[in-house]
Length: 217
Image 1 (cartoon, rainbow, N blue to C red):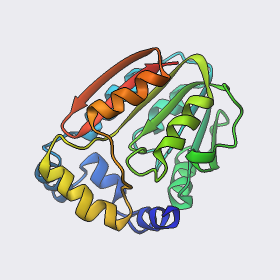
Image 2 (cartoon, rainbow, N blue to C red; image 1 turned 60 degrees about the vertical axis):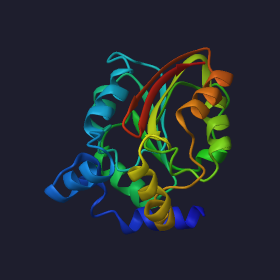
Image 3 (spheres, one colour; image 1 turned 45 degrees about the horizontal axis):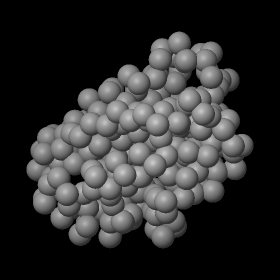
Image 4 (cartoon, rainbow, N blue to C red; image 1 turned 30 degrees about the horizontal axis):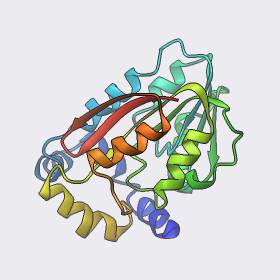
């Protein structure tokens, strides 16, 4: 399954950023037709707004993808120590190009279900558009919680099922079969139950079939 996911994202490298950022008319039509017009650019801005502009601790970004949404924010956090991690070597290569020359940002290869990172070592863990692709979501939730310091924040966004029949059909019949998404997928209530057991505070919002949130450990 992991290799299928990696191959899927490598094969989509030429269109990945355009689809996420709605960079052309075809990606805009795709978003309107299958994602009810949900704007990933707006969601990304809301997710990143949870992170203070003067943050100076350690931050983990998993998966970093191509860093199309995070590049400007991470570069601006000059007093922070940022680790960008991805399982896809191609995505990681593109992120490295964006962060070349910035000593406070490190890009490493890794698996979210088995992070080679110390317990309680990060003040912020960010996961944008990742959990719907992770094959072992239970371990991903456990690992992101494990490396987060008490009082730290877990911030993210991803697809949830049950909000749109059209989106759910797309995810189940195309995106999952191609390897871009990996079942099972949580509903809103199932996700809330998971997060409530792990975090003491939650701020959760739904935008179409996407959820974005900020939780405090």
